[in-house]
Image (tube, rainbow, N blue to C red):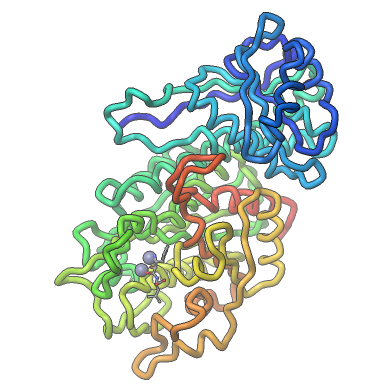
Length: 513
Ligand code: BES
Ligand code: ZN
Ligand code: ZN
């Protein structure tokens, strides 16, 4: 299989106008009035080209837009890419991340070999340089990413690598940039890793293949260990939920556990977080089969689990002082003579029995076992992430994930992490009323509620398995992909959750048990 684009990203001490590069990216705010120092210098050397571009109205500095100016002998770069940053007073780290993504996407389209980023310069002192460099690093990976590993005829394709430098002539600034950039690189790589795994189709990425990927992650890091339960081991442990969902497929289910061990010896004094991700490698609906239109999208029903794998990869490299379990139940939901059926009663790992009324509500059937497993490991905090309900997409659309939970502090901390990393969440309820709808006459509970508020009933189902443990749930059904390429990235899996969960876990470092 072909490699996805290889990014080399570093800082470089050099004068902006002297830097030899295929593309020099500089930012411009839409309400900047006069040009900032860097743009003024470039403009002068370009004989007023930036002024002319702006006067003609061809470029207004709006977010998501850019303009290319071809250079002359006065400047080291072959091209100047002016990237729109929108209104200065509204600008955030997201603005920087998006601008870097836009520049990287354009560089790949232009088949540039090298790009130099001077985007931070436009912000002046508005944002912390280190945080900005992290966002820029994430943005470079995000924007340059495309999923083309199965395309064999690549005449108009891309180069295999892109060298990017964050440039500045000032060593003190560079030091700050380098600090954040090294984090941005780890997170950016983890997100691209997750996007590729998520984009792989169900005939390639089976539960066993995901388990092998998790083992591979553990082989690559001394801080990670990996345990995988196959069907027999799950049967011995009575993980009836995962087994039921996987029973219709030839591709047998797996229960994947990655454990991150923090550096130092005081691990038992540190909190333990469980990240639980739904990894249905294909959701046909099972016997309650889905309509055929767009069913191919359901290869992405594994993206919660894969976001957990990506997060574990990032955490292992960033080494925060927290114990972390990554728990990924994985199965393929298929209709066959061996499938679980509507009406079946399943013994879940918790001991609770569940009456199946719809085999398409399979995410909660695998997650309940994984949440119970996390409770059994005495985790202090459980966060699950899942492409759980179409109802969440109806409620929130494609821009933010639903956030439910049983602990206000945990919900607030996740909202803070969301604000910092740009992956948006919106709070939704999962209270007792919703749970009531799932009372069963012949088992402890049913796997679906009534017609309305499906995202909330799904969460209320999971909540019952967390018990007294602090728990939060992210429904990422709407944000799992980009249906079309945007100004900032290519179409396909988004790997939503890698940035959010990594930011949350790394932010826990100052909180003692
Ligand atoms: N994987 C789907 C949810 C989904 C739908 C994700 C659309 C992304 C886009 C999930 O397993 C499912 O099928 N949920 C059902 C639940 C229903 C049967 C209660 C749904 O949302 O229709
Ligand atoms: Zn389903
Ligand atoms: Zn599903």
